[in-house]
Amino acid sequence: MPVAQNEKILYTVREVSELLHTKQGFVYELIRAGLLPALKLGAYKVRREALYKFLEDNEGMDLRDPANVSTFVRQAAE
Image 1 (cartoon, rainbow, N blue to C red):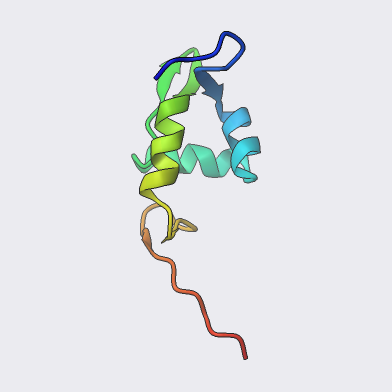
Image 2 (image 1 turned 90 degrees about the vertical axis):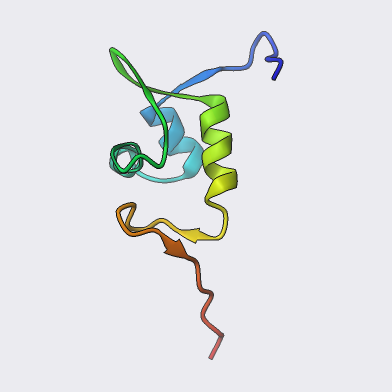
């Protein structure tokens, strides 16, 4: 996948958390659970392609507990 000159190829945990609108601790949980591949380069870094694949692979999934991923079930409106 070609990368534009100004496009990042690696994200920090903080940047991933900002992109996913979640807390940094949750990103670490995803990494520890093996759901989000990362590299250890001083600190954890996530490849752009790995983040996109993670999002595609987990669409429709309930990731609130990374140790127990399940299909997202939408509850009917009352």
